[in-house]
Image (cartoon, rainbow, N blue to C red):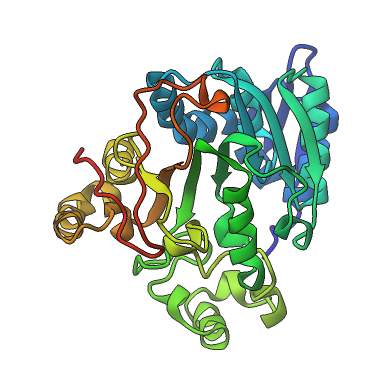
Length: 348
């Protein structure tokens, strides 16, 4: 499922580089070395899409998070970024005054190297480590329990191999400090009937792999005609999406406080960021589903096409030394049993 090679030009104009693809110019401060690496990994047309990602994805997905954290007095946060990709979120995190130190990693060698180069070239001073792991490594991360105040997982969980996913997600929660927050963002929701992440077909994510492959080839022949079954089902393809349960640890809701809606994510985020005509058109329909879920004590995110959720980890008093940087008014609540219903989210 790779993009065919396309003609492009890359010109260095001193204070910026200009990548031209299909007759369209894309100016960027990134170095020619970094751009060449990105083009080799993603192709010229897709590489152009990455250039504004610090703003279009960084600010879009992390803006509500830092408005919320700033509002509760967070500062000098130790952050773990899961999956650095091109380093666009890393850039955004480095600029946030609430952030004190950043550790980031990826399992893709090319993206690891791009982020390492970007950190050096752009002098991202808060980045303490850029690491390269494989899927086995990420089941036992080399970080102490409770090492991070904030864990950011954006567009990652759907790409985790299902045979490793539970262990990998459990690690994100293990390294999160008591009183800390984990943001699981831009994660396509398997429960939503239309798969919009990888294939763009209704119900395909609910099918076993072989029927899903046949369905994709039949309904999207131009895109999947030359894709083998092995490529279609390879680790990282993401078409199966992820469930809300996949975004939680093995212990379920136990010890977690759902602050998704309060922070401006979930249903609020969907409504406030809906730009396309299609998304705006489905808001009234989804509003009914959201009301039904709230009446049943369930999170509104369950009915949304993408999961954008924020959880606070309980277990320490607000005055504990590690969390002294946080506003003591941020109370910690937890459910009593694993798998219990989540705390009711405040209404938007």
